[in-house]
Image 1 (spheres, rainbow, N blue to C red):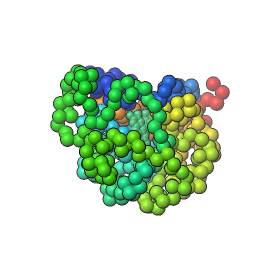
Image 2 (image 1 turned 30 degrees about the vertical axis):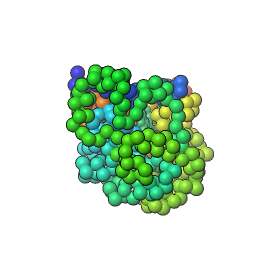
Image 3 (image 1 turned 60 degrees about the vertical axis):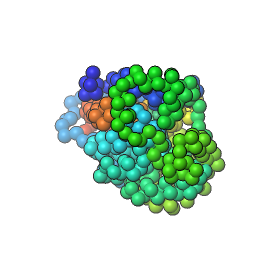
Image 4 (image 1 turned 120 degrees about the vertical axis):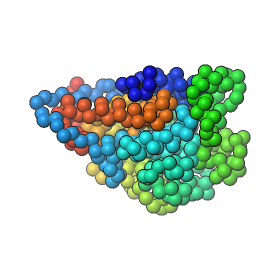
Length: 382
Ligand SMILES: Cc1cc2nc3c(=O)[nH]c(=O)nc-3n(C[C@H](O)[C@H](O)[C@H](O)COP(=O)(O)O)c2cc1C
């Protein structure tokens, strides 16, 4: 089956499972501890019921919108994801190109395999950069400057990973970048020959934003201890100010799941927040993103843009988030599955599937413009 035959994100996930070595496939398809929040992110979307309307003119529909003032062909961005170049060789570069061609934002993770400069070299429009604040502040300042120099048009500051949540699958799989060469890992790779062939064709096998840029990280053995020690557990609201000043552009705070934190975000001067629990990968037991969205929109939505990620697996899920007041959404795993299944064509297919589902659902709800969606399109009492 080729990626173009995939009809759903689940089809792409099945294809990716067959193409990507187990340790990397499961790195994407996993959540923290019991994975309860990971599952709830998806399940809670299914509980929301749409209002079907009939005999409404459904011609001339538009999905075009804006996120933080940038035009988007539909309000769906690619979320920042680490290790993306391990789902497919040069994964971040390919995904960024697919997003650019589709007219949606691509967000590059600090923990990417391809570097900021790599992605810049294959794109012509600005992409967004996601920042993890490390204890090595010189490294962070330099990273912000590199994102500026590359023309990135938004900084997405992730707040929900000051310490790392535990994901059992990664521990059991002995995940690392570059991959280790134990018999188990070699076997996992040997059974995925196309993935291996692609990987042999690139030199990008480790964290491109870090190696050669962080002090004391010139080689691979120093990298793993550096990354595990470097996330800053003391990061506080006060830090937003110097990051904002150094960056000087659009700032999006990612990982807000509480109304009080949403109000603090507003006071911090950020342009937008992303309601997110890191795709269920950090605090297991936290509420699903979609269940928290309405109250966060009620708290700050008239003063700043509220975006959402977590659990979106279809255009219908995107529509539900928009109905609850999100101005934009992000997909993580859906694009990773597309990438693993078929590189750039797979990411394009992910976006096509979501666009089609969003468009048809909007029409059958009796709406023609994505910007007109509201809670009125949802059943309140079912
Ligand atoms: C494999 C993987 C790696 C991720 N790495 C990062 C990261 O480096 N930085 C970050 O801010 N969020 C990261 N996230 C979280 C995503 O940005 C996003 O919040 C999440 O994937 C949304 O949920 P979804 O996968 O259900 O769409 C990662 C998510 C996944 C699945």
